Image (tube, rainbow, N blue to C red; front, top):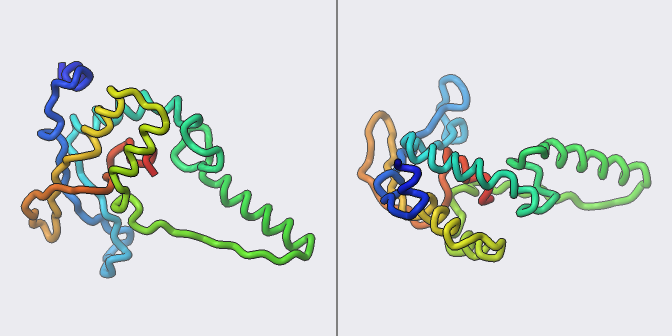
Length: 173
């Protein structure tokens, strides 16, 4: 029933689109902020809706993403980039050539996604109006709270970014 309401645009997703940000320690007895991983805890029905959308979009991701992107695409391996880099370094050394390597780390990339830009990209990829509506409902207009030391803040509205914990988020990066 709820999925049918979502499908036809009758489900008020804003009631389901809320999350609690918290920090999970990466190591035992973590003390520095770098030793924590931020995560957004989402309610189950919201995650089910986003998972259904993820399953439906997954077969098209190879066509929608550059062939050089290996992360988060079924049938591709994130280690392919590492292996390609190793081969390039080996070949450069064998040929006694010089070169420059640039490594970019997109720190906090999930937090910095601009929604206008994201939906311009979705438009350019040819998504139907219905799909754009669904994606906008699950990405935009959510409310968030921060939990720290077992205390939860008041809820606030986000205006950019995609949530870690949302199964669709890796496809937006």
